[in-house]
Image 1 (cartoon, rainbow, N blue to C red):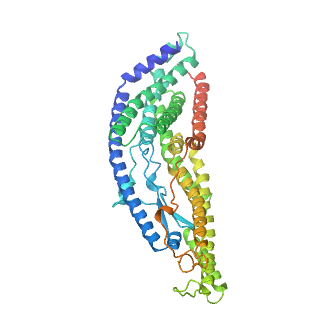
Image 2: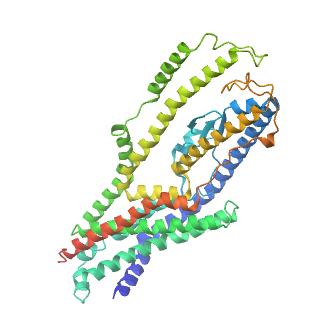
Image 3: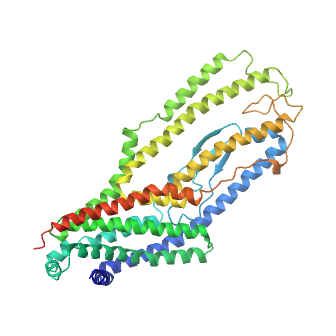
Length: 465
């Protein structure tokens, strides 16, 4: 009987006009989004290659001057475009993708858009997560809102239950039929998207692509299950389909708009941090105190004489100034990270937000990617400084007074470009991605069981007359 209910409802869903319209919309959006992504990715890679080439040329020129210039020069580590942005762009237009560093410090981060018109970034990309979280979730609600209340209005619910069909079997049948119908709506679009991306050369078949695709499918099924349970719940809390639809659309809007913005409100009100003006004032106060306490001659310089005694005082003073700024800013940056990580928990109330965060983790993009690069660059910076000091220690013409901004008191010998340790981004491994995505996966499972459990309890008390 359960199989009959599932197959019957799937057939009805497939034959329904609303599913036909939704299917066409999704196929068009998947196709257009994939074609657009091919061109966007090619342009982004061309810009990135041009930028990387210029950065390497800059480092080569510094190496021809002296080793110290390599150590003190501030470099920008721009993140390479990911070829899995078709799954989830992780709001890359708002995520820091550039970190500035030298051998002495990791200075800060910024957003580099590499575009002539920043207003082009105000719209959402038509990626898989966008399609699933907006179009598919809305479609699932349209399929499920009248699953019970609609049957009651048509006087078919009483007839079905009079044929020795238990309420539990009927509800399970409808639940699984909606899930299967939703998956069938999405799968063709995913296949078309993959074909376009592979034929265009944007993607190559690999184990990582298989992991990302399968991971998204698993998330997609869990998300569809959650929205299906939500739609059924809306259908059993009302005796009329219109009211069920109104409740469903209200909750959909709450999950789509209210919950994500709640995180912003929470960050501003509950997890306050210092603003940039306060940080600048603290830096100025700290630097003024250091300069005031510095020995006389700490700013003296004789560029043609590396062993000029006052150069040691100058190097120490500049180092103290850098360390004071570093301490204040590092604390500020860490407070920003903590604020974000706390505030983002408020979005766990929304299945739509959970889908986005879990997809971001599985793709190794967005905030998880940024934090990994931020931490890795700090490790690299210490290794870079150790390398430089080892090179400087071998130079008898250097007094070894380490100045983080000037090349007046450390090695002025040239160095081969090939000997310079360059930072290379290490992408998140599959276990790291799964670990980051696991909370979101577990939450979707929990919400599916919770919502469907509440639906079962309410349906057992539902008046079918």
